[in-house]
Image 1 (cartoon, one colour):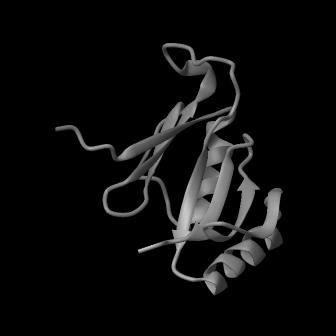
Image 2 (image 1 turned 45 degrees about the vertical axis):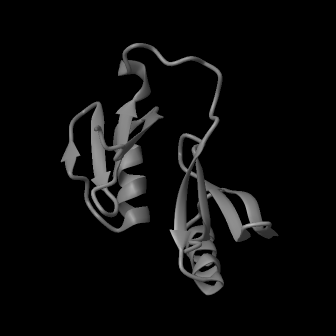
Length: 122
């Protein structure tokens, strides 16, 4: 059985996105090519960044309908990420708020992909 372990975001400027995610994740990419780079996250899960003008087959123009979520252990960690990312100048699409699953906020990467921080529920 295949293991789902990769999410790919289509990006306008791969070099800018690599720089953004290197700072955000505090690590360098696993691989880096002119049109594709990837970062290992946790437990073998990988984030890929693919130059949108080279994606084949061409993606639909329906827009951004998902988000990359970073799950943390407690409310203080949610707030710490919020302060760090806001202080780093990331656009905040949703300010800190309480939802039915707990405290959360949403920031945006350079291509407008949603980056949510929320609680890990064991």
